[in-house]
Structures are given as C-alpha cells and as structure tokens.
Amino acid sequence: MSNWLIKSEFQLPKGDSGQLILDEIKKFNKDFVNNSNFFRHISQIIYLFANNPWLKQREIKSKLDIDISTLRILNKIIRESEHLQNLITKSGTAKKYWQSISPFCAQLESALKNEFKYPMRIALYPGVSCQYYCGFCGRNQAEKYPSNAIENGNKIFSKILSELDPKNTAISISGGLEPLTNPGIGDIVEFASDHGLRVPLITNGHGLTENFVKKNPKIMKLDSIRISLYGIDEESYEFITTIKKSYKMVKKNCINFLIKRNEENSKIKFGINYIILKENYKNLPKLINFIDEVNNEVKNGPGIDFLSLRDDFDTVTGISDIRDRDKKYHLDGLLTEQDRKELIKLFKNFENDKRLQNLHIDYGYALHPISLGILGKKLTKITDNEMRKYGHTQLSVCVDLYGDVFLYREAGFLNRNGNEKFIIGRVDYKTSFRQVIENFLNNSDGIKSETNDIRFMDPFDHVMTSLINQAEDDKNFGIPFEEGPVALRYYAQKVNLGNSWYKDAF
Ligand code: SF4
Image (cartoon, rainbow, N blue to C red; front, side, top):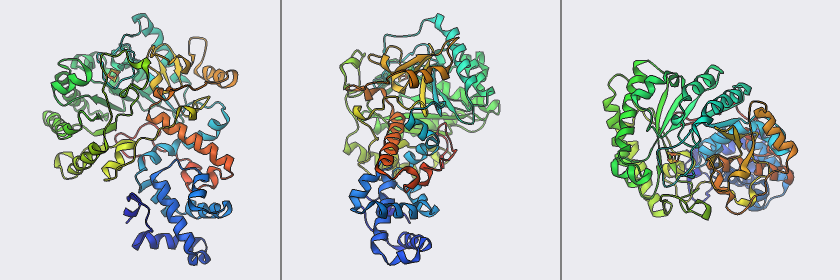
C-alpha cells in the first residue's frame, strides 16, 4: 500500500494510499479536500520525511514553494493523523533512523540549551587491551591500559552506574578495546543489572571461552550479547583481524556459550554483528551457513537470535587523516554502487531461506534501504563545521577505564591520535559523573571543531548531532518541532532506548 514511499522519485500516491491521505485531509477540514495543492503538498512532505528525517523546515518551504502559514497547516494535518505518522516513521527507507530518533527527543530541549541532563545512553568501555588489529578500527594499536588501572577503573564504573536512573538512561558495554579483557567484567555486569539496567555487551568473542564463562558466572546477567564476527573462515578472519586461528576460536565460543545459556534457561539474547565491506560482501551466503552450522551444534534449545548487518562507516577505512596511518594495515575503500546492487540480490535471497526463519535481522540505518531494494541512501553524516561545541551530553557519551568521559564514541580509544580534546573530564573518587558533565557545560568554552574531527563520531553520534542541528534550525526558522509534521519529535516516546538489535523499536 505504501510502495510509493520507497520509490526513488516522488510520485503522487494513487489507490489506497491516495485515498487514505484524502480521508485524513477531509477528517481535518472537509473544505481542504477540494484543494489539490494540499493533497500534493501533504503527499510530498510525507514522502520526503519518510526517506530523509533530517530535512529542515526552511528546505521544505523552499522545495514546495509555499508560505510559512500554509506549511504550518500542512504540518498540523500530518502531525495529528496516526495513519500519516505511520507512513512517515514506519514505511519509508528512513525507518531505522526514526526508530533511533524517537526516544532521544525527550531531552532535545536541554541539548539545545546546553543544560545538564544525565545522558540517555552511555557506552562503557572497560576493555584493557585487544587481541585483534581490525582494518577498519580506530584504536591506537600500540596502546593498552596498565593492569594497575583495572581495579580503580571498575570502581569508577560502579560509581557512575549508581548515579543513573534506569528509567532514563540505557547503557551498553563495548569498546574502546575488547571488554572481556577486563577481569572484573562480571562485577560490572552484575552491578548494572542489579541497579535495574538492561546490559547489552558487544565483544569480539575471542575471550568468551568455556573457561572464561565458568570463572565469570556473573556475565549471565547480561540482557544480550553481540559477537562482532570478522569473517566466515580462517582466511577471511585473518584478513580483517590479522590474527591466525581466531575464526575457529570464536565459532567454538559461540557454540559453547549458546549451549551454556540454554542449560541455564537464561534469557540472554545472543547475536552476531557483521560489517559489510567490499572485500567480504560476497561471503554473505557463507555467513548464513556459519549461523546454520552453529545452530546445528546447539542441540539443547534455540541458537543465534539475531544478526545485525552494518555498513562500514569509514572512520579509518579511507584513512582520511594522517594521524590514523600508524596501523598494521587498513582497508582501502568502501562499497561501490555496483556492490550495493549485488547486495540487494543477496538480501533478497534471505527472504526465502528457511534457515533464517527464527532469526531477527537488523540492517541498521544504511542497509535497511538496500534490504527494501533501494540504492543511493548512505549513512547520514554531518560535516566538521556542523559539530556542536558542547557535543550532545544530554543524549550520549562514553566512558573508559580511566573514568575519562568522551563526547563521541570513536574518540573513546586509549590515546587515539587527536582524541584528547573530546575528553570532557575524568570521574574519580571525588568527582562525580554529573560534576564532570556540568563542569564542561557550565565552565568551559566547549570544543572548536577542526578538519577531520568527524572521524571521532560513529553513526549514532552523527544521528544525534543531525537531530539537534535540525531542531535548532527549525526553531530559528519559526517552526519548532512541536509545529512540525512529525509527532514523535515532540511527544517523545519512551521506547527501546538501549538498542534494537534483537527486535524493532516499533
Ligand atoms: S574493532 Fe574491536 S576487535 Fe577489532 S581491533 Fe578494534 S577493538 Fe579490537
């Protein structure tokens, strides 16, 4: 019914879709039905936002060539209709973005005013080191935390967690470096879980051995665990990680962990993340074989619950900055348009593959359009100049083992060249998490962005900054979010603040 929304060019909706829009206009004011411009403009606004959540009101005004008061009326008709809202947020190629945006709008106003609110999402980076040297990773490969930093670092994590209200903040444990290299990881998981937080963990799976799980039973309090899978055989694994024998190790660990989970009747959701690169996308059928092989070995219950597929977002791959060149090696380019065409076919095959019936596949922001057969939609990215002086601390930050609070997720690598300016302070035994953020917001001049600083932002950081910039521009233009066409940006929903790997947020 809403296929017109995922066409590459706008066309006036016909049939059921057209009728639905006409009905909603009539419901709002029957006199407007005879105004064919209203029908066209409303259809256009829905189409544009369903495919690009970042459009500003001034851009819409100029695209449609209408005056502000007409735009306000059109927005009201759309905003007050549940059907039209669903077309925008659930039916276009930008669905994954809308799912991400929704809960974070609750603290947008504070973000615009640079006033303190605890971040809605915090990524903890407890890893001490990492076994791998992935070609797309921004970490400083020469660095690891000294072992005497671990005990104090883990106390700091508990201190931060105890400040948080689980109703308002979600956390994740990831890297930074590899989180399972922290011998106190079980304590962090238990502390967070007992505090009422759902705890998702992202790991490379290398250290998730039977022995590790036996020695760290507290990790069974995780809500979900996502293994970053770097290949589908020894060769492809070594190509990405540069480490031999990592494939067999990770595969064995996946199988054993799933068996253990099922033995304990644990509810932990277990999944795989796979980054699609031009060097590996042809291996996707083999990735499905991998999942099937693992599941066949797990005979005491369910196997892998979810698969997240991600586009390489190019923090390092193209090595845009000389400061990232001190790597063992790096990958040299991103997916081409032809590669993306091939991906459409590969994703199409997933639909009929019986082995995937019980698997939730999350395509993420940029691959979701490709799963719908649409090309030309890449990850949204702001420019260096659009970075915000005070970041988006009300929405998201990350913290490492030293207690250093980083504005952006790709900055949180120990001694990554150039990342110091994004450390806004250090939590220690006398300084709280709140004090660090407040001090930055109230007593500093913020951060002046420079060329290539966006390499410290991950896709989620780009989304959050885009959202604040858009809210600011719309407000200055005279049509703030509450008068815009999308209700969830104003009536922010409390949905799935943490992650949407194993189920859709809505
Ligand atoms: S991507 Fe993860 S596993 Fe790979 S080198 Fe970086 S921190 Fe280690």
